Amino acid sequence: MSGAAAKVERVRGGSTRNRPSGRETAPVGETYASLTLLTDAIGSIQSFVSVFVTVYILLIFAYVLTSWIRVPHSLQPLVRFLHDVCEPYLRLFRRILPPLGPIDVSPIVGVVVLVAVDQIAVRLLGRLD
Image (cartoon, rainbow, N blue to C red):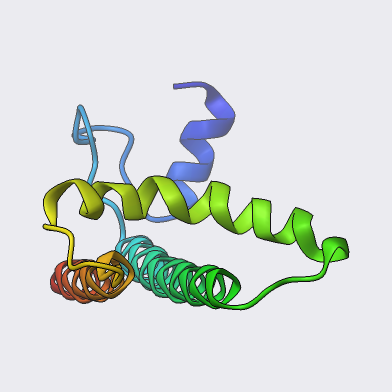
C-alpha cells in the first residue's frame, strides 16, 4: 500500500494490517440499489409482454375485419402487412384444428393462447419480483 493510501486508511479509522483478503461484501445500499434495479427490470419486462400481446391481439382483430369487408385499393399495403404479420401465427392453429366449414376459429384460439401466455409470463415474472 502506498504512503498516501495508508494515510487515507488511517484517517478513516481503519488499519493497514489485517485487511480482509479476497472479495468483500457489498454495502447494504448497493444491495438495495441492485434489487431495486432488478425489480424495475422485471416490471419493464412484464409491461413489454403485456403491451406486445395487446398489440398483437389488435392486429389479429384488424386482420379478421379486413377479411370480412372489402378494403379500398389504397389500403392494400395495410392488408398485406396484416396478412404477413398474422398469417404465420394463425397457420399454426389451422394445422391443428379441424375445419368447421366456412368458419375459421383459428383467430379465436390464437387470441386465447396469447392471453394465456401473457398471464403465465406475468405471473412467472411476478414470482421473481
